[in-house]
Image (cartoon, rainbow, N blue to C red; front, side, top):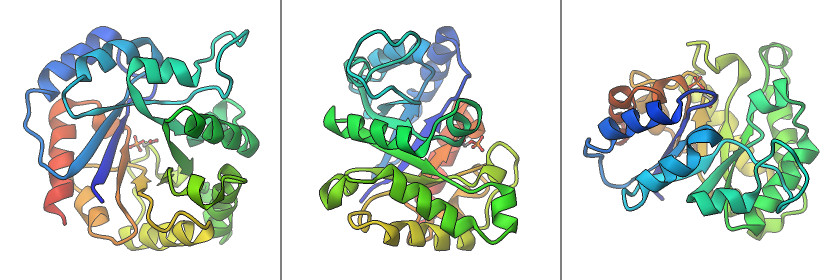
Length: 246
Ligand code: PGA
């Protein structure tokens, strides 16, 4: 199974900036045997998708709604993502849960809609610093995983990508120790029938300096990268470091 590195641009990059990034990034040779995806903001997604055609780099949505179309002002549907060229969609990111009222039930509906539309969901789970300090980290991420995949069955669960992103590590520069992350991700893998062979990504202050340590761990199959994916040279170096670490 190839490792997967996903650039989560969050609310960064205008269309113009995205094109400048791609001019640089697509000129760099990338190592074989690693899958890469970019999740731009929705305003740039169709343009970026067009530019990525034939490049071998996949396109991902940062979120979506579960309905196919209709009167849902401000939302994006699964067919809109597939039409733009997406093969992945990030769901349940902690920033959606924290700031925009995303619930476990909503994540579950979105995961089902993604699979029904041929999109691979990248399902994010993670504990807060307070939950970790209280010794509740494992229980929290396992509960989130089970809720997100509820009712999918073994076959459905085997089609997702999971991402473990401890909230206290996102955008803080305080990345999770690789052994700790590996143990938690092993517990996520064991928590639902069907997850045994899926890819589980680590996210939270991943950088070129620390990514190889994660890539060596048996339960870590890649990274979900925010800040370090915004600069083409830094992101290219990070992708190369993943393969060098293994
Ligand atoms: P970060 O973000 O790499 O900036 O910590 C990761 C994420 O939230 O996906």
